[in-house]
Every structure is written in C-alpha cells, then in structure tokens.
Image 1 (tube, one colour):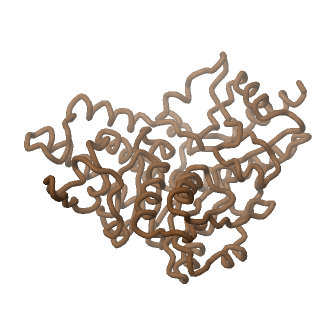
Image 2 (tube, helix red, strand yellow):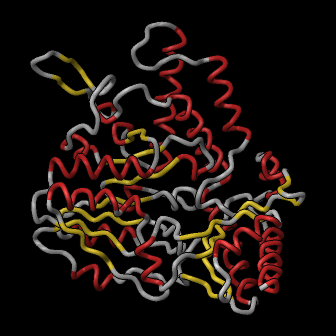
Image 3 (cartoon, one colour):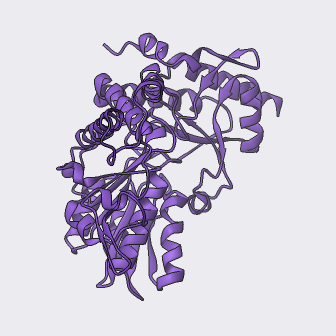
Length: 404
C-alpha cells in the first residue's frame, strides 16, 4: 500500500507553516524535500566517519571510502548500468552535460559537425553546445515540437546528415511534463551510428530508469531532484565512450602518475573525478535512492500520474485557465496561465496562501517562444503530494483570479 501519511511523516518540512498557513509544496521540479533518512545519513557521516577518501590508510578514510564506493554501486543498480566504472559523480545534471560537451567536443567534434537537441530543452542542454558553436564551429540542429508539446519524430528523422555526431535530448520536459520516447529516439540515432545523451533530471525522480533498456550512451541526473542532497549528481556513460574521451578537469584523484614530462590518467570512473569528491553527499544520494526504491518507482509514478490527472481535471474548471503542454504521455508537471494574470503575480499571491509554485521561463526560453508565452506558472508534484493539496492549489488560483 502507498501510505501517503507515513511518507509525509518522513519529511518534517511538510509540517511547517508559511504566512500562517500549512505549506503546500508544489515546486518539486526545481528541487525536492529531503526525508529524515537522508539528513540522518549526512549527519551521521560527518559526526562519525568523516575523512577524505581513496588515499588514506587509516580506519576512518577506509570506512569513508567504502561508503562512497557503496554509494556508486547503489547508483549503478538504480540506473541498471553494467559497471560502476560507468558511474561518474558530478555536482549535478548541468555539470554532467557540460562534462560530455567539453570532453566529446575535444575528442570528436570538428568544424561543421552537428549536434541535435530539441525545442523543449532546459538551458543546461542548450548553452554548452552553443559554447562549442563558438569555439569549434559546430552547428545545432533542433527537433521541433507540436502545439501539444510532443517531439516531431518525423522531423527528427530528417535532421540526420553525415555530419551528425551526437543527439542530446531531455527525457521529461521540466515545463511541459512530456515524457519523450527516449528508447525510440536512441534507436533512430544508433541506426545512423550517432551516440545519445539523455537529460534525466526530470525523469529519475518519477519513473524507473534502465539505461541498458533505453540504450543511451550517456545519462545525467541530479541528486537534489530525487530527494537527495544538493551539489551531487551523476553522469552515466558507456565504458567504451568514457575510455575514449579525455578528462574534464585535472588534479588529484584523476591521475595515476605525474611527472613534469607526462601525466597518466586513472582508471574509470576516477579519470573524470578530479579533486576531493563530495563523499558525504554521495552517501546521502544513495540513501535517497534507497528510499524511492523501497517505495517502488512504479508506485511513485502511479501516485504522481493520478495526481497529475486529478489536478488537470480540476484546473480545467477554472475560467480563463490555459494549460501549456497537453501531450498524452506526461508526468508530474503542469504549466499554466490564467487570463491576463502575469505568472509572477499569480505565484506571489499563491505564496501568501502557503502554496509554493515556480514562475517564469523555467530556464527554457526557446520553448516559451515556441509556445507563444513569456512564462508560465508551474506546479510540479512529488511522491509526498496529495489530492487535498491539489484542492488547495485550485482554490488558491480561483481566489487570485477573482481578485483580478
């Protein structure tokens, strides 16, 4: 049974008040709240195990190293990667994508080469490739979307040329909630001999991810969006690709030996992990993944999809409501506008009612232009949200609407 009250009890922040009203937290697309199990793990490691990892021979260092590498194995299982050598710890999805862009750009991309992205990408999956446009003279090709917010796969198929070198697309849109058919996208790219990077920031918290089933070559996600600590993330990369790419940064841990004449690099995945890792945050991330795994990713998705359906139905009853993105396959995110009310005004007034939503362009300005809006209000759900909170949201929006 999906015991929502028991789950909510694991998140103390959900019991607080904002402006004298019970907090209704619907900004999970930006970051999720943390269960006691994660915070307790962080406190315990700092108080009882804290020591730098990998290079120490003393007891605490050995214990901290074991915890850090056990966390890597937890991530491997969560993604169903073949080996922990394919799991690189980063600061988050943004750094993971930048790592691939930098290393892939140096090793593979040349003047005139092409990278395919989509119209619904977060800036983190646009700007790194634009930097390569400036530095290496590559070209971005863009998959268009429908008015409902679905990728035009027919147009995607036409974008491939003999200069296509990489496809980099989001798994789930942070604005539209659209769940993209990444297995089909990957298969189409591989038919042209082109590798694929998947931005999984918005999918890892909501649905079961199997990188071997998807077939992708790279997959990135952030810990803080999947109920883990901030400042920790993951890049999955096929071992053959990580072997081929040069390091992202230089320094300690990523080396095997150093002289003034030559440096040889460490084995995978350490070749891409220069400096002291956030070994405490990796433990917190592992506990977060243990938490969602124990609940069951399928159960979490079923709960969130039911909430999304219920919220969509309730929101449609509000006069002047305009939903942005209505793809048949979507998950946990609803973006909307009401009449001529500016998103910032709506978000500010909802906040005074204790309702936390996100407003603006959501780091997806090209998508905003495609949908013909400057910004939206976004309600995004997590595993602890309830129908009652949806009802509070709907009542709050209607109250704001009547004020205008």
